[in-house]
Length: 402
Image (cartoon, rainbow, N blue to C red; front, top):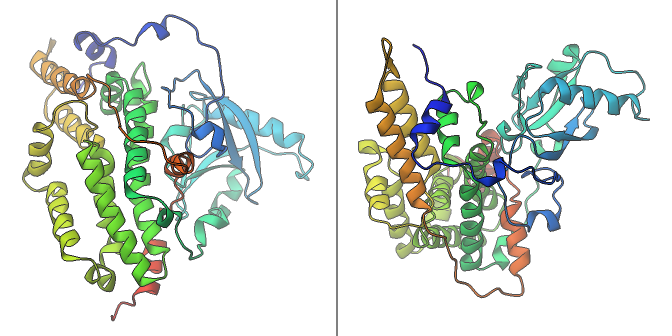
């Protein structure tokens, strides 16, 4: 089946403009991604839209877990990344031999590996929450292991205990709005309609999806690292309150991410923890679960979002699911004729995204003395995304036979 190019859809989205910035060259600057150089001063800056020409710092690891830091364009091809790595390794005192033919591999915290092709582009934004890039020779591929900090964990009190639910929720909403505002409508089309063939790579949209996964795992990580049952119950209450505040401020991305994090099997099995939760909070969480219920094509969620007025932050994965269903269930061409009915439906879905942010989101809150600390915490969440490890932590808190 022939696939219509994303540029065709771009012209059909009436009024969709990439803005004057596309016509003017901007000053090049090195921008921090989520997990590159976790500098406080960088993470506190307002988010701006990433473009393929932007330059970033990135760590690329070797099989012995040493690393080199490269400065690269975001849209850089894998072959160019490996050339930069090889050049760095040649001048490294820690490298006893000259590097041979290298391959670039993404290694997850659970040990899964994905080998990139030399022609692949913009791989940085496709990485999972705790996925790292490794450069190695083909013979070393099977011996690649996740970083030690991704495999081992140590229990301890959460910083979240010292933060108010209101302040954390506010910072979640502000950051989500910054990320969502960076995503151009065309990125949704590119993501669904074969991004590798499109004119624009959906870099900012990929980061929003990464953030959604990050928040889900953050919830589970914080609860499962807490060894004290009373404190764990307090954290459970706090997360439900955070979810309620995100919903109140119409941030459905973090709202549902927190709910799904609490529904993680490693968390939902903690019977003693949930039994200690006051009835009011249990009832409230049941209401939240009903909104996250996917039955009847996510009817509860769709009823909720239809009742809201802009500005709001939608649950982005469901938007992409709807676009994907529309794309795969309808042909783009019938013979030599373009399926304009399909394209009008796509354009209407994209215009709804524009309506969601037709007015600026304003979070009214007086900054507290710990404002910057909370902001930095929310923008650099430390999470465990290995489900097997999370379940192991859960069983150590409450054994299976309890």
